[in-house]
Image 1: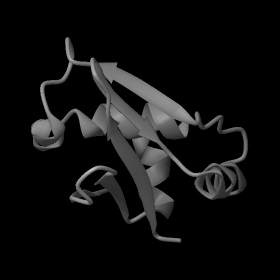
Image 2: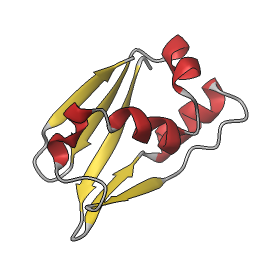
Image 3: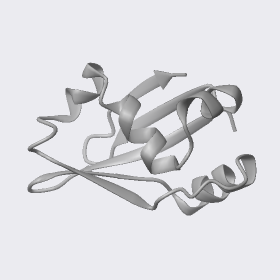
Length: 95
């Protein structure tokens, strides 16, 4: 797997970022000692829309969600893809 998909779900007061169980297992296998989370919530106080990903917030979200710092991820993963579960729109982040 060279890309990791993160699902983005819009809530009433923010966004939930989630990974599938298969991605969690992949991350734990690839990076022993990693502790990926199932979900991460960011409120509207912090983010104002799905287009926030173009402002660099995604670079803070995926290391927290995956439990692995960007430098370690960059060695094994080519890109992170954020998928809006409502619209199907995706944003890719090259590492």
